[in-house]
Image (cartoon, rainbow over all chains, first blue to last red; front, side):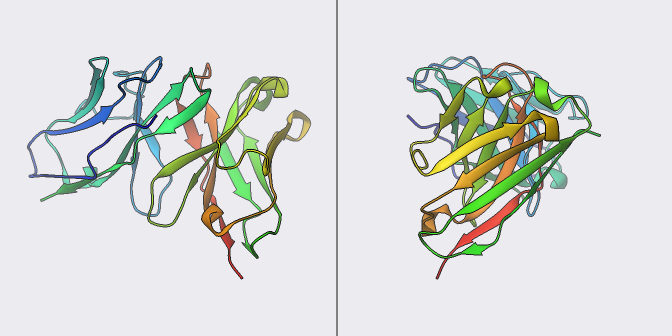
Length: 107
Length: 120
């Protein structure tokens, strides 16, 4: 089982970026999203589908339809340029799964 | 400040062994589950191993099962990853990460990572 993410996404400043994560067939309790900038460790931006940690801008939101989780970044800024990863706990196989990552480019 | 600091990464030949350490501070280490996650150069994140509180439960990724061993020492606020029979594909930055709650919760914080290079 794997989590499927688009490898890349390009968005103009001020527009909305939507990054998807396919979770079909995986027994999960929720999807978490991480942002990783070059040379830095990842940081959680969304937990359990739609929760937002303190310090993360309200521009970041998440949703989950059951088969596909989506990270939405509204009013994209240059500082949002980074790699984004989705992550779940696969309770059937007792493994943590990461998506392949999406490189967000701000035009 | 809640912090995890990894150490022990270095260049090691194929077939060799290495022990990574992760020192925690700023929180009650014994109350939290811990994982190791790695990232090969230019690649995505890959989960390696999980250890529960009191070492009650341990899981491994299929790619490292039988070669890697995770342990913890709550008295030293530390978790370790013993890596044997290392392969070129084990080359990566290894991150120590804390689970916030149950086994399905998210990772926070992440350490800065330690680089393991397997090469002759």
